[in-house]
Length: 141
Image (cartoon, rainbow, N blue to C red):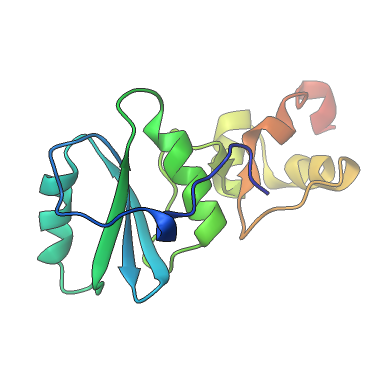
């Protein structure tokens, strides 16, 4: 379930990182193992290269000079499900049930009822916030 047109990161040219703002992808072979964002990709990649827990053999990126990187990163994480990404960016449209409880100021049961009533399906345990646009106090009961 994708809400913006995503570029297949495997088709992007691979480069030495430049000081650019954008979304980057770490690969192991042809598999996207991590999706990230940075205002300075070169600096961020150097952090990943020194992290023993992140094994990758190449990377790709695309420049995203303005706009919301959180939304883009979240959509790419949902699309490629890289195993090294364990959380979503704060500004992502994708939220866990625990995050929805905080955002909607409610408990789990009203969310479960809303999900069932509106036939909402989580994707890898995450819900699109837009699916809860009509959620209000009346919907909680």
